[in-house]
Image (cartoon, rainbow, N blue to C red):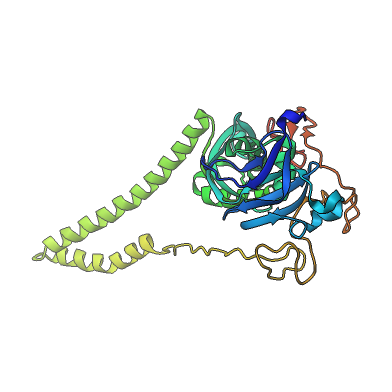
Length: 378
């Protein structure tokens, strides 16, 4: 970085005018000389992450912070600054937007392969929306911003879309036998896919708050088969309606023949038959399904003790809650300088980014179960 990019910083704050920016870096390019005693203002629904020499060393919650030795104790342990922190510090600050970002789009760019138990191998297109929120700002910057250069909702949409589509393909292959049963299972599929994606999103410091499937579109010939099956269901209900109308007509005819013995006999017979007929056609009502909303609670992932939302360590077991990175083997939170996981001993390294289908050679996610191209189980 050349000296022409050098910026002297005394006041650090950021306000998102667009409503679509996930992260903002100060300075936007190059390095900044952050003066001793500089004022850092973090607004509500924001977090400020302090970087030194390309590494996150501290995170600040909402409020006004004076950048002195007392406020950045982690930094003073990592590096010895001469003259008692009176000289400017070459560093950067990332402001992270912690609000819920809504109406983000996901969908299949190319149709994914699905093995239908009745129709054979078909290709499906799927589209929907999802909402997300950054819950671990340091982990999000280390995993996405630092490695992928993602700063806006449009960029995170493009990156996460591949993850969603791959998990959609796996989930469909494991839970659905035939898409002829699809129209009645949209809600169940949306909820199940959202649960499947929670772990993937948590690896990036994100929380998937909602996911919706707007449409799952098979080829035109398969759509016609589904329409034909739906019409058969309508015709079956129409037969019941016609039977009921015929019974009502017979009852009316019996009432109109009040003076004749035959009419009286028919009326008596219909009086005995009608309760059984209506019991046959209207029995077995379904009770409305009840759903309960699970309220999310802040708890320690290690000992499950209730903890303050902004806590950085669990007051019960001491587990680190401010996530810098996670073990690829067991998912335990790790410190920035960790070489091995203290829980399972796994070496700290990134998981493989792709897995190739043994049948067609198509690139998929590292832990994908079904191939997006040919639908074969890997």
